[in-house]
Image 1 (cartoon, helix red, strand yellow):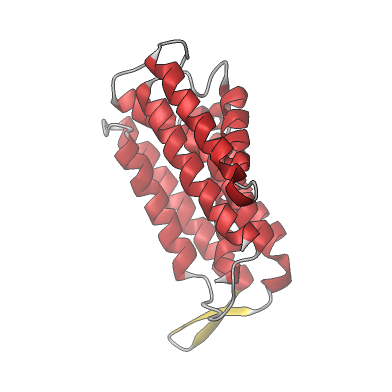
Image 2 (cartoon, rainbow, N blue to C red):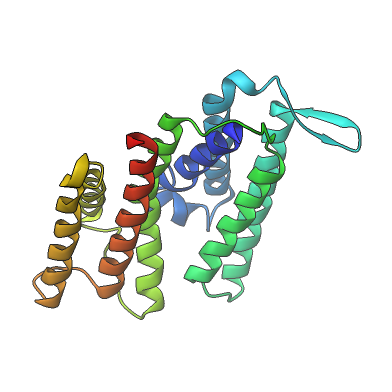
Length: 229
């Protein structure tokens, strides 16, 4: 699964970090916007998987497909899925959290289908850490945005305080990486965040606080498992 996790990292960077608010809006109204977004994916896959692109990744009906071919197929599927999603939204399909998660499930299915198994390999530490950072910083922001909108609230998580919220989640997760029982400082910080929301002194909705807490705990302790053991 070594190559799979590298592809996952490339996907998250291209689909979230590099897909700014402007790019996300542009791709819905222009072919050029869609092209720019889609091209970010092969660039990231090639950069991150460069040492393995000449390897044979999978066999289909006796045909050996190397990394270059598999990356091309992954990008093609990504483009088709994104075009279909934009078409569906234009024709009245609500752009909800469920639709976002469906979209990501299709992309991950393509990554898994065209990745070599390489059984016995362990995910590389730098890749797992990088995925955790992107998840906390960008994916969680997008998830909060969609859930808040589904709850009928005007989401501001991608607006004025966007990078402040990202930094907050990264700091909170970093506290969970402290050795021994010092990670309890992170738990205390999350409790403080909840207390601020209860006292209505924080500019965060309940979905924002809950998703932040779940993301920080889940990703923080996952990274702790890989880094500390």
